[in-house]
Length: 287
Ligand code: UTP
Picture (cartoon, rainbow, N blue to C red):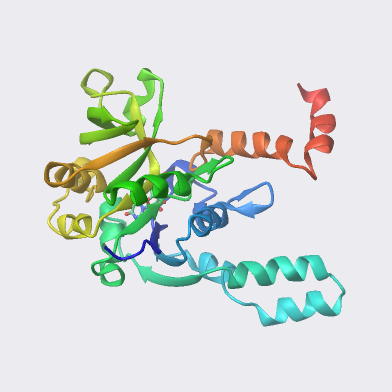
């Protein structure tokens, strides 16, 4: 099988949980401390050697393209003003990856968004990453998945344990068995009621798939919420070939809603080498 280099970032959702902030700007461009969510995601993918980025965008998402594009005017202004560090950073972001943009004309679901990138995948394995799920840690989340992919050459899904009472917010997996620390998955359900949840292990927006997933996705019909669900295709895949779950280590924030986003800014702000101390002192009177 070909080397794993491609990764899809679906960014065409409506972001309804974060309205009105997301009415005119993409939630993937919301900034945590000093850079937008999508940049965290792309840097994580690059750290795992996945350097061919396919961004699935939709209406109102142009600022994502601009963020990763070269702005000659800005770069020359920064240089002329002697702002060398800023120049280097802006120029690094614009050149960090090869990015292809694909349009999802209607937000018909995550599975549909991934399917929109099918043309660019062909018969290659590929990653999928949801940038509003921010995961930070010593080993980037995608790297943790890739290590299992390299070992098994099978599809790998990033997982985290969630409190039983919160299973209704996530895709939840059923675990068939465990060999050598690898969880073999037999299926998954999207946002189950607590009593119907097959486990407390949730899918957290990081995936690596064999090309077969894309073929199965083309056959999926609208499911829960009348959307084309990625989980339906994964469940089908798991019937045909091994799909493994990897408990991901790291701090995870659901930054696609205001509560998780605020927490991400607070925690990463306090941990930040440049801003942490000042922020801690400034916050003291409010705590
Ligand atoms: P979410 O359900 O978190 O995103 O989908 P959403 O639909 O934008 O958010 P809410 O629930 O309305 O607040 C997970 C990811 O899939 C993308 C989203 O952009 C997000 O990154 N997505 C979802 C698409 O690209 N297209 C879709 O049709 C749906």
